[in-house]
Image (tube, rainbow, N blue to C red):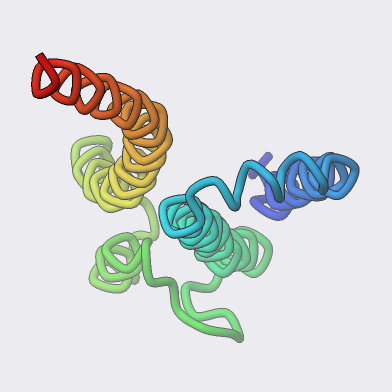
Length: 164
């Protein structure tokens, strides 16, 4: 049984809809908080939107690969109608080289799957980076907010020292 990536896409979209509904219900306090530091919060929202789009794109990249695998399984032909795989190009190339024997050895299949896993891990690293960037940008706001009163206290102390 091959897992359908669209199932996870539906889950992601349902979660985004739920978050959107909560954001609409909390529109007034969220807009006040957003306007507290609009440039920074705008950058956070832009980064969030880019990260969401990237992760959805990564999920959608798996759909043609799944279609190719299921078509090969059903038809027992290496070139079923439709597009050739991109992520599984090495699997296709190795199977194309051994047309008479459509099975790969355990060692060659392991090396091919390791290559596919490496490509998928690259995509995961970028999404992890986006998550870390969002955490950093989110923490920057409170620290920036804490620095402003400290600067004001410093100004008060300087003004007291200047009067004496």
